[in-house]
Image 1 (cartoon, chains in turn blue, green):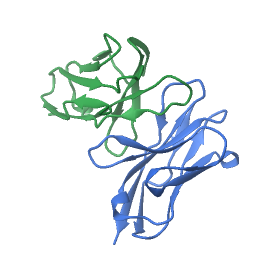
Image 2 (image 1 turned 30 degrees about the horizontal axis):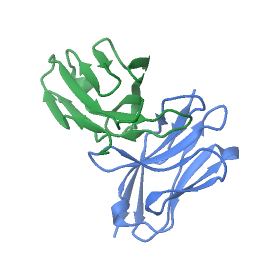
Image 3 (image 1 turned 180 degrees about the vertical axis):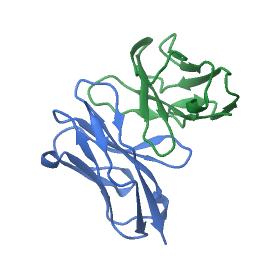
Image 4 (image 1 turned 90 degrees about the vertical axis):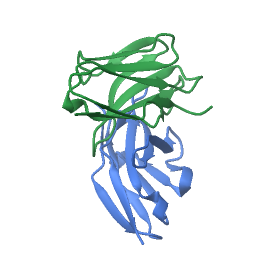
Length: 113
Length: 114
C-alpha cells in the first residue's frame, strides 16, 4: 500500500534562512509525487510535482524538490524563507495507474523574524 | 475559471442533524474527490467520481455518509445523524483525466458538530 511519512511535525526557521522539509514514501514503483501548501483555514495549493525525468523539480514561490529513488525521498527545499511561507506543507503520492492521492500528516512551518 | 468552489465554508450543527455540502469542480475536470481533514492531519481520501460514476469509497465513509454527482458536474456530500466525531474540514478536489494529473482543491467546508 502507498504511504507517505513526514518525520517533522513542525519546524521553525529564521527569515532568510534555508529550509528543507523531509518526505519519505512507500510504493512498489516510482510514483507521482507532489508537495502542497495549506494556509490556515484554506484549501491546498500545489507547489510542485514530479512525474519523471529530471529528479530536481522547480515549483512556485521559489521552492524546489529532489526525488531520490534510492532513499524513497522527495524533500522540499527553499534557499531563503520569507515570513509569508509560514504554513502547513503536505507531501503526497499517487500511484501509476491510480487516481487517488495519499497525503502525509504534514509539517507546520514557523518563520521567526 | 474560478477553481473548485465549496459551499458552505462553515457549518455548525447539532448532533443528530443531517448536513449537506456542495462542491463545484473546475468545469473541464471529469474526476472529483472528497477528502476529510482533521486537526493536525493530512487529508484522508473519502470517495472518488469519474464523471457521474462513484468508483471508490473509503471504509472511512460509513453508512451515514453519501455522495452524489448526478450529472457529472457538481457533487454533494451528505452526512446523516451527525456525530461529534464528524467534526472536520471536508475538502473537495477535481482533476482532469490522465496519468499523474494533480488534484486542485477547494477551500473546504469546516463542519462543527455540537
